[in-house]
Length: 292
Length: 164
Image (tube, rainbow over all chains, first blue to last red; front, side):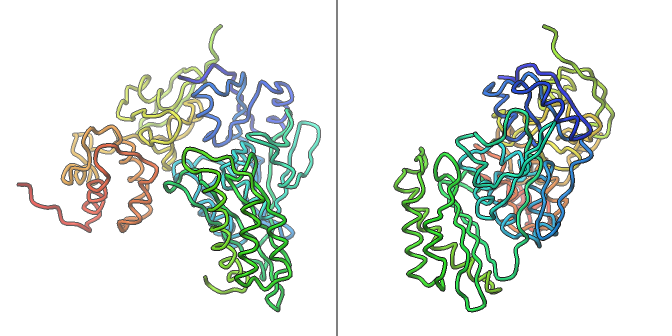
């Protein structure tokens, strides 16, 4: 099938884009990378009457660090997370996770904000945002607001973005000394959506005790899952084997995977525990400044 | 209803092309049906097979996931631009012939374009790097081994066996 006809709008500023969205409302969709939207349009699962192409906009900021936060705008592509040395230096979890997202050809066009706004439950980057306690800026023609990542993902392909809003920017912390991260996933083939994936962020004090832990899972339910109870079992410990095992076991129960042709629910839960047990020690070593 | 139209000017394999098109026209269909460049193949139309891969401003992309209207002012490279004007195969293409790196040829243009960009960045890749670079292109015929060999031959890392 081919896409249904649409009015093509190519604004040159963010304000123009948001005004166009306000005018067309539900009938208009934003086109950034198009790597999730255009397949849907090719299948006619999406038939927007108007397409607002963001690629000619000149006032969307390039990635930058400001006040301890790495700020990534709506045209930051997956490719940038892989190759931009400033992003790699500021937050290594992004570059580690992005290697698992699709393939180079997809990453050359696809955008981080587009991927988050699409909110596929199996996508890696939404889980990464939860692990990083990211903040997402939603803007409309008349206002803007910041939303915590935990409050952004509401269901399958469903986010807190309202009909007149665009996800314009993501802010993630610059990874400070004492904080270590790790992303691991298990997929049938490299580049496939994972059967299970985990993004870990740990902060240790100078005695090596964990003061903060975030464990986030993808392909773990209708949204990415932040396993807070599992993370609580790590806080206050020195992340010895028994603490990690306990957290892995808790995570197994805390997620709500839906199963698929590639992996049963039981196998997804098993993978979550295994990946947790592998990822936490790696994040810990990185927090200590050691090479895993 | 009259369909929304747009006029675009794009450089394809070095030549400027100006056309009036439907805004919903995919880049893959623009290349094949409007410019008659049928070397770019359409396998899945949802971005997973890689047969439609072309270079836009030097980067490999899925032409089935871009609208032609998005390429206004951009430069596109397709498989037709690889050989010399007199038809002589370039080094990579010649290596594919030597190594028998294609059978039906359906995936081949997408693979050649992916590799053209890859080798520009990494002129002497090892086998693992080659296989990783190819991970976004599916081939049902060859089992990939001869494609990997073709790349090793093209990059001077493997001596082709003499033809029997």
